[in-house]
Amino acid sequence: MKLGICTGPENMQLAAELGYDYIEWALNAIAAMPQERFEALREQAPNFPVPLAKCNCFLPGDLHPTGPDVSESSLRAYLEKAFSRAHALGVKLVVFGSGGARQVPQGFSHGEAWRQIADFLRLAGEYAQKYDIDIAIEPLRRKECNILNFVSEGTMMAALVNHPRVGVLGDSFHMLCGHEPWEALRFAGKNLMHVHISHALPDLSGRDYPAPGDGTDYGEILGLLKDMGYAGGVSIEAGTKDLAKDAAKAMACLKPLL
Image (cartoon, rainbow, N blue to C red; front, side):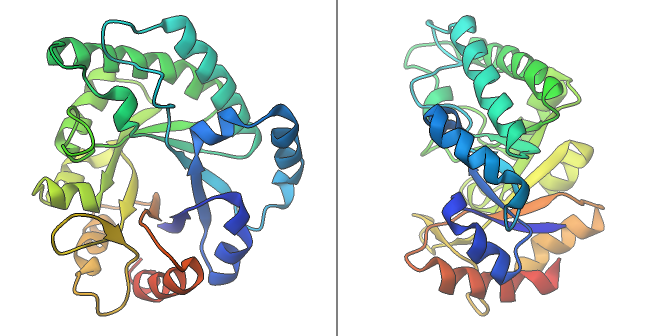
């Protein structure tokens, strides 16, 4: 397993110095960059201190794959731009969380929204195949989204889509919020493409970086991943006011368990 952090390219050097294997940045930020800034970043890509291997924040909040006003042409235009740019920067996997974008509008059929998301993921799979990038469906807690809230649901969606580039992600925070057992990761099996990990606050109101002695048994979830033969990435996704300090503690906490 490889260990990364969710952060921007401005923190690549710090990530490298602390021993992280990669960073995970926002796909919608890459797609929204002015062309001149993107070209400058692409020129730097061969010399990145650590790979920009993964992206989260798949869709901008105003581009919806669900609801009555889905535009295939707008989705295609975004996917082409985002995936071509991500490929040029070395990205190998993107995370489909995007709770605001995929939120089912009030009064709209959830059954129809499930079908729409499956159609969107098949569409996105075309661009994933073209640009050699995998897509991991991220289940989100109900506070952030009203559809696809459990790893078990993400696993079923991946099976429904049935595309070799589409799998599922397990996020420890969202799993805890939904009281979903870690065994759901084992159930996902070969469809498990990526993992997010963090230290959940006691009241589950938020999350911060893992640290030695913070009360969380990270060996339980990481041990399960090792036992099932998972060899993908584990990204720390959490808030921090001091990235250098917190990322160093997290490295000390998690690296020996991988």
